[in-house]
Length: 334
Image (tube, rainbow, N blue to C red; front, top):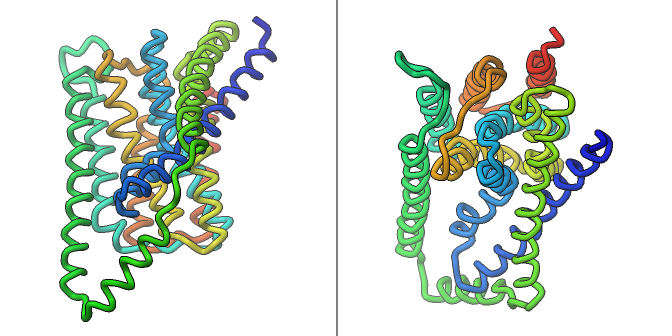
């Protein structure tokens, strides 16, 4: 098949994934409100995961289409792109990003811990004939994320109960109930249709994305993992980029950075964990030799920036230069 046609299919697949995630996110949020879920619960279960659905669907489809090496390459490449590319661009747009204490207390340690855990799983111990993530390790990753999500949800419930005890009057309670009733949206047929259309586009886009990547790698004799860790990772990271840049323009650093923290945590645990329940996930040489060291470096820099509480424009430029170096190293241009 002609290279230009494959690139066109690849591009259309990325657009389908992005639009599918957008439709799914928007309609699922409305369904959640309609069912009476709190805004926070919807945030941690739907909104925080919505921008990572392209990576997840791509990983699942890669395993189903017998290209499991794409899974880890995509997850690792997406995390590198989230930090070096998305944070870099967001810092340039926002001028200066302030890291809120809430992210430092929970998400920062979890992000560092998730990256360390991933490294331990990937590192070849004595007797290992191949670098891969096996099914028991994937189960541990999924379990770890469930524990994290459970903690966040129950912590929110505890906070909500404490807040309700501190209400000074019955009038205040009525005002809050009235505000909640007023903001509860009406569920329409189009919302249900868009929900299923979003899932369809995610499945459709991820299938043809994987097919085009595999064919391109065969035609040009490039490792599948090298394409996945750069092209696929950038494509599936576009939702995070759009959300964070928009939030930065509006001066909302918490949303801009929280989106990246949440996405990277989800990628480390679930984007690798769920496909890993279906099949063992091998790592190609480029992902292991270049991707893993850059992931550790990018995460360490992000943690340092988080502890300092601010990310300046100069740091954003440095992140972007590092990402350019990463691309050069993957393709062996330097």
